[in-house]
Image (cartoon, rainbow, N blue to C red; front, side):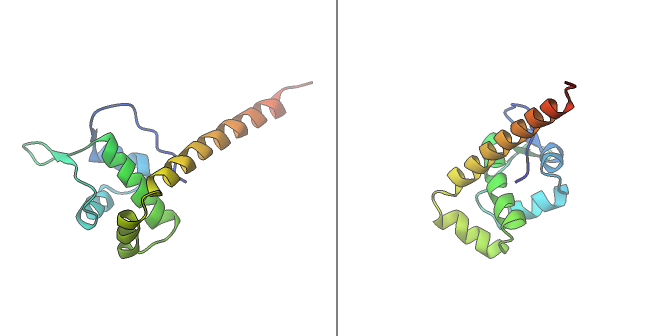
Length: 114
């Protein structure tokens, strides 16, 4: 699963979001059109600003489309019918964080001379 590193803010620009997910901004805009669950705020100029809730929804979409290789229609259906999907993605994020910490710990133990 992708590790998203975004600072704690109220709003994120589309550039920040695209960089965090390692995708092009055009893909984020396309997903916005395809998934009604994504509703970023817009300023007077029309720039998109994503809330932490939007980021959570993008994580679920990314997980379904990029990692589980769902079609867009399949992902749309899964988002509307699977009530525990948010919990599943959240659990995967936590497990990936624990895994990364364990790998760091292992590397620090291997690097120390005896």
